Length: 119
Image (cartoon, rainbow, N blue to C red):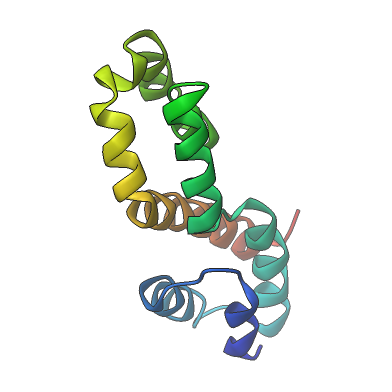
């Protein structure tokens, strides 16, 4: 599979690209195609996380945490107004890191599914 397909992901960072290339190097062509399909459905771009963080700051505290599967932190943000807005502001600043960590988890899950033979 051509690694340039990963470049089609919106907002992909060099760190994420390197992680994906290294992580899928041992997959067969068919497994790489399966990985790409699964991962592209689960991936969140940093711009998406930024938008969710802005909404989380002004409308629903913790939305960005719920979206990334951090339910406990989402509930904490919800009941503490984003940890008195400080946590929500930090998430605005760190949206790329939040997206990268989430995408790495999703890449690992997608890799496991592809390695086991598909969905």
